[in-house]
Each structure stands twice: as structure tokens, then as C-alpha cells.
Length: 78
Image (cartoon, rainbow, N blue to C red; front, top):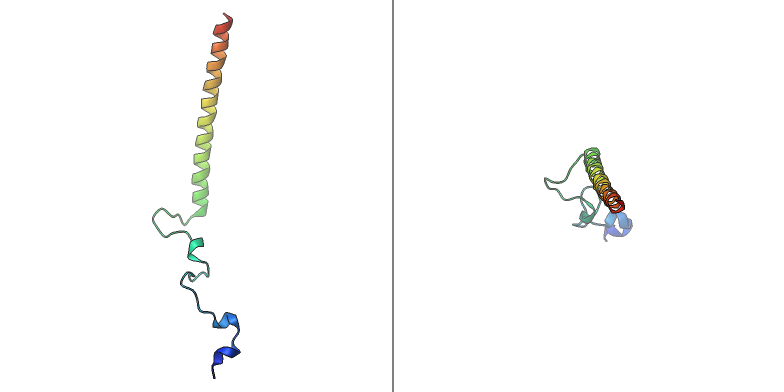
């Protein structure tokens, strides 16, 4: 007789090839390459600093556009 009948389904289940030692499917894991960062705090800081730079650049562009519009209005009055 087989002893598998006495085991629960969890005990008889074989690990699928898509699962890793963490128990997560491979689709949920980040790829292992040189561009993947192991430091989430660094990644957060890097993204935050880039967002701040973009925000400043957009603010400057808006101010320049407003200044142009304001100058045009002043020349129209004269």
C-alpha cells in the first residue's frame, strides 16, 4: 500500500518549477541582473531625488512661460 494516502495534500504536493526557495512564483520575483538594486532605501532616495529635480525643472518652465506672457501683456498695453 502507498503511504501517500495517509499524508495531507500539502505534504504530498511537489514544488512546482515556477516556485523558488522563497515560495513565490518566478513571475513575482525581480529579475537577477546588474540593474536590480538590493537596497530599497537607496532606490527610494534615487527616485525621490529625480522627482524633485523634475519638479524644479517644471516649476522653472512654468515661471518662464508666465514671465513671457506677462511681458507680452505689458507690451500690448504700451
